[in-house]
Length: 390
Image 1 (tube, rainbow, N blue to C red):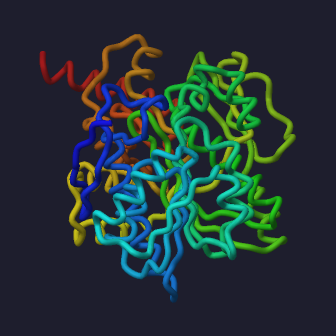
Image 2 (cartoon, rainbow, N blue to C red):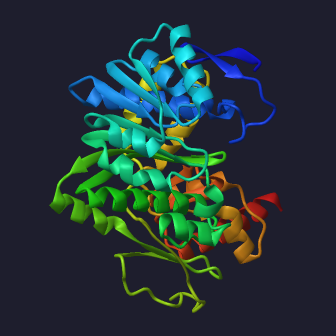
Image 3 (cartoon, rainbow, N blue to C red):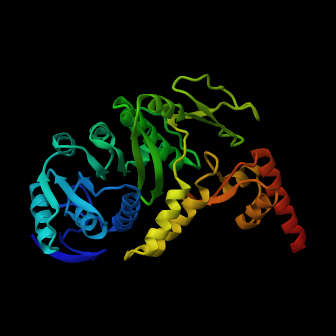
């Protein structure tokens, strides 16, 4: 098998040559996910600052071992990393890569992710689940084997299911109804978060989401896990539904597992589309995000510029309302061409409402301005622009 050496972060990794990134590759390595790994290094470094002890990490889908190697080399206060993979060739290459980087605190095991987590002696401080596809079948073993106060890092690349392109797989994997709306990626994050919360609740644990994002072909959630029956019950109050009107774009949130959901939109009377159950709590912690921004500045990261742009957008929208509006979607609804989004944002801010861009969509605006007022504002901005051009 032909191989070549790549450099990423502070490590050198031997990877096999293959034409296309896929699950059929002899050993899985995806160069596109470098930013994902950069982000993980930042988040776990920032998490480590918040705890008073060295940490143990489980990377359950090791591939070439690049995550485990980077975690060992680039995160302060890591005493032990367990890297797992079911592919014997991947295990062989990962072990070789640890030797290549003179790493002694990483243990590489040939094991299924669920078995790896369940057979560990003691609970992990950090569990990283980054599978090729859905993480659904690994959520319960993650929930059972994460230490209270620990950090879970979960990726999902089955975005077509979470975003509503394929309905049945989402229902099957996550027990939720997706909807193909302009904010479907946010819905996808919230569906994944609700599934995580339900799996944690079985173990009397609950989550506090530090950071989440949807980038390229994947979604990723980082969350602190805490323990306690009463607070777990309270945490589940964050689960509910989003009712969306496809005609006028009005939407509302309804909390609860089996709530009474209006059938029709109160604005225009059209039939609602409903997504859920999903997470209606916060999907980012502004204080932690500020720490991540400062942490990223101090680290050597190839994707630092792109990463910081993402962090700043997530910081700005962290305390905004659930869901956002797409200016192009609203303008299509109004049957007008779109004014400049920055002009609209400036006017919203002048009126004292919350307003931010969103990392989920380039043309998205996260605001608590009522939709009908927002529509009128867009018409006013458009009319003023036409008047100035006349």
